[in-house]
Image 1 (cartoon, rainbow, N blue to C red):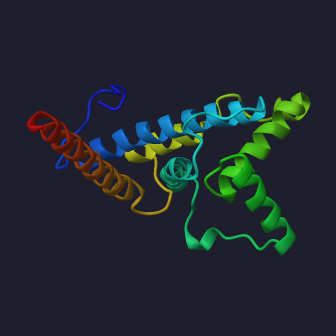
Image 2 (cartoon, rainbow, N blue to C red):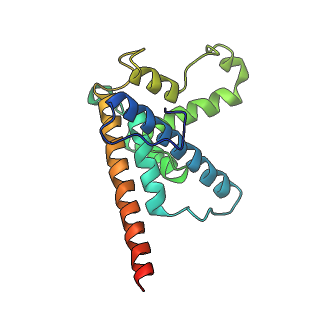
Length: 176
């Protein structure tokens, strides 16, 4: 189900199915933001590089990177401000994603250190999928899969409203 990008679940589908579908939408958002980043790095802009569209994609990704309230880290204000600036510039959803990208860049630039990290280290998406499928527990906040299912239902409702608006617009065109 989740691997079929054209398949859209019913709004009353089981939470697991909805959560897996939402993970695929999140992966799409990550890929899309990568296209925007590449366009910006090349000195250009993508036609969809708009604040509203980017905000929706970033908000969609944020649940992958936000831990529970007991996982906060005290940092100096200037570090938090710098992380926020990097996240804004590089279209990252939150500081946790920023740190993950910084770590990946550090390991890419330091192959000797990277060699000490297990090669089969799971990606955030791999860990999220394992959590939704029940193969792991505790990598994400409690209720993670249910939260994804709720987000999927909201996404399905948003799509239904857009489709309804498009159909109404077409019906209006036909009556003219």
